[in-house]
Length: 469
Ligand SMILES: *Cc1c(COP(=O)(O)O)cnc(C)c1O
View 1 (cartoon, rainbow, N blue to C red):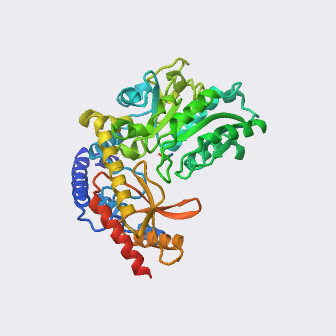
View 2: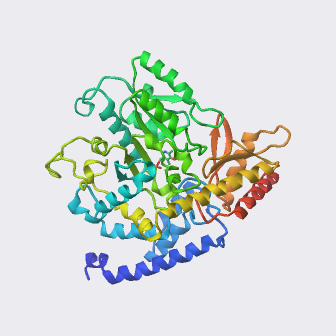
View 3: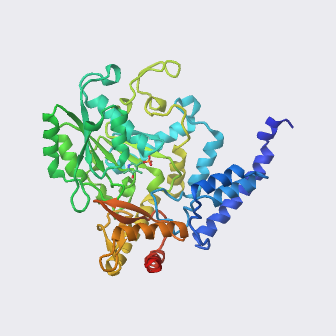
């Protein structure tokens, strides 16, 4: 066998593949049963670099195991940190199939299955957002989906043809001061600079103050800034609080603005009978970003971008690429006309595999479980005199902190507790800054986490605090 024959040897693939699946299945059981003592085995970055630089693999099995052991264990019930989903194994398998077939892309003939399934997924899910005639695309991440929507908004709402001629005008979007930083980034990528993002303050429960929209809008207009749209957060990343999506929608209608909802995290609430109300008003949006890799148990990055008006989904990249397609008609099946990507990962199958085999209702069950647990956790915090809540949660994101004794420095204590927890590794939680102070933050992403784990977390944090004084 030549070197190259060996690379593509089907029997070698079969053997390694079986071993890999066995290793991953054992690890899944180790995590889901809570038998694995740590959710993260934290290694200092420079130390880790030295380890990897000196690592010499004896065989692929050894290499696969080292990668696994050096990673965060997302299926461990104590994984309650950042907003990345522990993927459903079936979705991960679909992703793996897509990786070897590798037939995704801009043009239909390269990607018959994944492009057609993309249409099926978007068409099946859009009615849940109230978009009965809409359309959409699947792309690599919420950051890119938000940028795509905002470029589209500029093409539709700005006077003249900005895509073709550029523009000297000063454009802006209005957002909550708590919006995800990628909105700020999108505005700057489009060249709008500091004045391109108008940050509207939030109230005590971290929702955008909708009664200030008028003032901020008029102020910008008087300075010669042309406001093109509004972004609603559903929910905001730090606190997990949903904006009043109906009020934002009404304001957008009144002023003929593009209304985008960044529902990267919490869009899938529409699949839950209990939590759908959080998204009410979303049917007023022109576009909605929904990450499947956050609350839909799909591997990263897999993001849907829905448009209320199907025609708009063709207006983002109104440009010719003659070697790929020779017409400017709206061909639903050539997705490269509508996505930032040219070559694309086979993303649609990751969502479709779950819908087909477990039903769309599985997405609602995941929301019910994770959002419900956050409510129980908030109750536990309310009842525990050592802790306080930043705000009553809407979603599965809970911000809270441990109280300091007799006026000691609360911020310092919470930073130290979080740092100690990271290095210890039995729970993975994060921290955030709210109105200038430090809070602990959990995102209950794992539907296998239970109230027992969360009760244990509070005891664990209390013990950490005592071990520090
Ligand atoms: C996570 C998140 C993003 C960024 O999405 P990626 O998929 O990580 O690029 C944007 N907005 C909100 C509200 C988010 O929660």
